[in-house]
Length: 568
Image 1 (tube, rainbow, N blue to C red):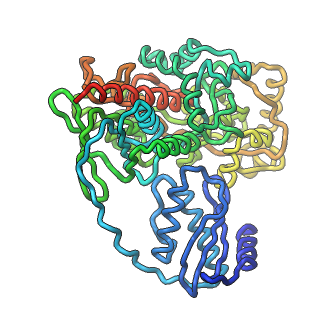
Image 2 (cartoon, rainbow, N blue to C red):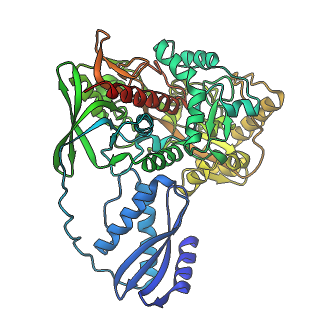
């Protein structure tokens, strides 16, 4: 309420007339923080909406441009959000509504002019990449850097896919940053940690490829604009291995922004709102795709196709098909992650592996789909139940923590941390802005606000801090104890498990070539990222998805490019 009052006073004080009309400002709440807009109007008609201040990630720029344009065209904020940027769009709408209210104008909604008819035509290229998330962008860039022509297709209006939702970081061993910070690690140790986390079900060749190329992929990403300056712990890792942006910001949007800018600079033909409906096959070889764009269909003939369409975590029917016990579970995934790429590959003879291996993430906002980064636990947050007591080693693997949470009263738990953890992680400010994190000046006040036993919470925290000072958790054997939680205010977020990652998918080899059930290569067809199976085994360790999609995205792009050079 206070913010809205300030907004209205500010807006009225800034109201003035120019040659082009009057302008007024308004503020709304985006995903990462406040969004300020400047609205220009004449009479009761908006002539322009400009976002002048925001804390959103770079990948939302296109969404901002689209939503402001749509608001002006419709003379209303009752317009569709841009898929993949819902919170940003809602924040802009809120800001425009505040500005309009402050100006005292009454908008008359219009029917937007009919969009120009989309012109599509059959075409040819060297490499087609299907999917514009982290794997697809990496594949497109690496193929382009091999000197071939590339078309990147993304069914949503924005690039990024599930990578936009990645928060914790990217795991790597033997990186230059680890070396600089004095972290002793090896690809072999990374391999063993991941094999243990995957319950020894991981494909050993694929896992070895990922771990041995992990340090190099960090350098590759940094060379293309990625901000990876910090290394910390995450669940299931024995050393500091998860690389993340400065200030603990979310890794995914940063990677998408860096790779998107690189792809644009390289002149890659990027086509959004373009859904691949079918893989084209001639004999034993895939030769292109059939595409639908705004109701129009066309074909792209290509010498090689890279499938990077993600998993199926946002397809409840498919999740239930392979793991019935997850019926009714929510999902942390982008709405784009519906598994049709897997089905298309299967239709041309591709084998599927590990399809029943579906992971839940233990720290998803209760009765919501917003995921809380594992870095919160990595920086020292504890998990308590309604009785105010710890019940698990917070840095156990995701499946173990998820199971333990479901055994608690209410099938949920509370992440509890102090101001020091908030200061370490920029992502937490977003949780506070969205109302996910509740604060208290002391533990008793916090407990009262969220409905847990305050006396027990105080005792639990006192005991935990003793473990930190002693360097040993004798209760749950947590071996990473980064700090005491002693600086007020304190924070709590109620969390519960939700479907997060599908470990199963298309069968590939170490060159990212798609394989049939008998292990034969399907010529001209490659896959990378969550569409594939085998890398993670029965459980994925936090931070390994980003490693998987970039390492194999790069391999897929390079392999497809080399194949296209020797194929007519």
